[in-house]
Image (cartoon, rainbow, N blue to C red; front, side, top):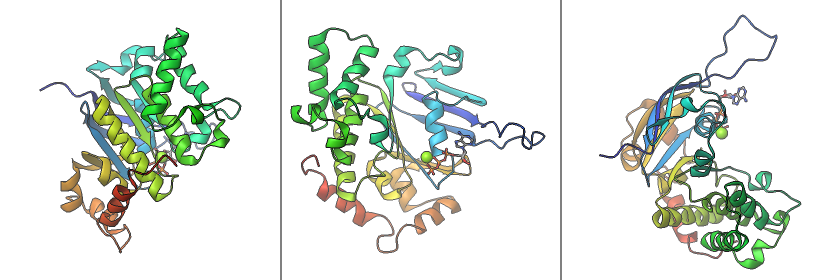
Amino acid sequence: MNAPLLEVDDLAVTYDGPIGLFRSRRPEPAIEHMTFDVAAGETLGIVGESGSGKSTTGRAILRLETVTHGAIRFEGQDLSTWGPRTPLSYRRRVQAVFQDPSVSLNPRHLVSHGVQQALRRHGVTDRAEVADRTRRAFELVGLTADHMNRFPNELSGGQQQRVAIARAIVLEPSLIVCDEAVSALDLSTQGQIINLLEDLQSETGVSYLFIAHDLSVVRHIADRVGVMRAGRLVELAETEALYEDPQDPYTRSLLAATPASHPSGRDERRAIRLAGRAEAT
Ligand SMILES: Nc1ncnc2c1ncn2[C@@H]1O[C@H](COP(=O)(O)OP(=O)(O)OP(=O)(O)O)[C@@H](O)[C@H]1O
Ligand SMILES: [Mg+2]
């Protein structure tokens, strides 16, 4: 069997405590003993309540946090061997989509600008190629030439998130860390974006680390799901197994806490499917 695309091995991240305060007390790790992998073309969901360490895990993989223990390997390469500067090739191949697209879009530039800039930053300088790849990326996410030439505030939240996805996929990444990528969107727009991510995955073979607090969304998109509690992974299993036969008591209580009218999230999944094929809104 091929090595996984991404391996996370006994990972810990500890944030520095406030300087000067409680200096004698060692800060608690935000995450520890995190071990999992992501295969090429796979979607690994990460769920857990607020503060459990989901974003910290994603940010460590994106090299936005300092690893205090353990290792992250990408195609067998240990990231710690790089030092503080992340090679451009890794920054190209591992992309991110966050919750609030309006934060990552520059309000003073046309939305096409950010996508073009991403290409230029990664060495694509030929003007015709930049224009062509930008247009294709917008097409792939279901946006038109008209959308490309608007400012962020002239697009809906769902359309803005499509732009964020266009900027991620234009670089043909191997892995996209999606941190609450659909959480700010209404149910039908969530469905459209989820379907878009799935379509892109079947077209390009990209892997997703799909972080979300919404268990039903994760059930819809993930091949396997990891459940985090207080900085640790308490359970990791194939999606159906995890939802139908959770082994850890915490997973059970998390599933039991989903709304009573649709305890397994089936109604929401249906809504996602029904909303799926509508136009980009
Ligand atoms: N920059 C930071 N400095 C200090 N502590 C932090 C920092 N970022 C996060 N933490 C702490 O690390 C822990 C994990 O936070 P994290 O953001 O990873 O949680 P999360 O699971 O993504 O939560 P949410 O669902 O609310 O997004 C929390 O206790 C949080 O307070
Ligand atoms: Mg978070």
